[in-house]
Length: 114
Image 1 (spheres, rainbow, N blue to C red):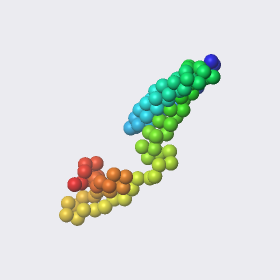
Image 2: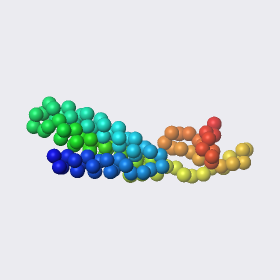
Image 3: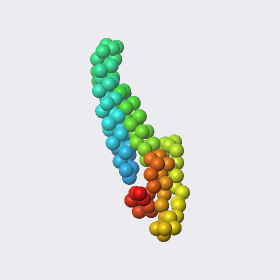
Image 4: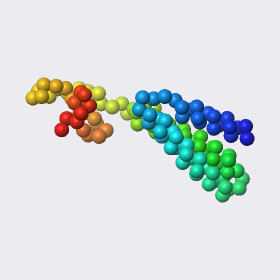
């Protein structure tokens, strides 16, 4: 039982990490919730592992997977670096960027170019 509380406290600590976008937090919380539900269901069906233990393990695994997913959405945790090359539009007299992930063009201020 002590391990369960330690695992839950660790997952909560990881989920409390601060980012500017909030993707890590949102995905960690969602992953932990889904993992807890799945873990509780597996724990109830298996009989070998209790519902509480299954929920705790599922929450820890789901929270970790969600946090990594959010980190990758932010461009970290091994995600491919976004294209930061700047282009110049002579007609408009200003610079723009191309986002290779979405295939869209953006002005320097973030507004869509087209």
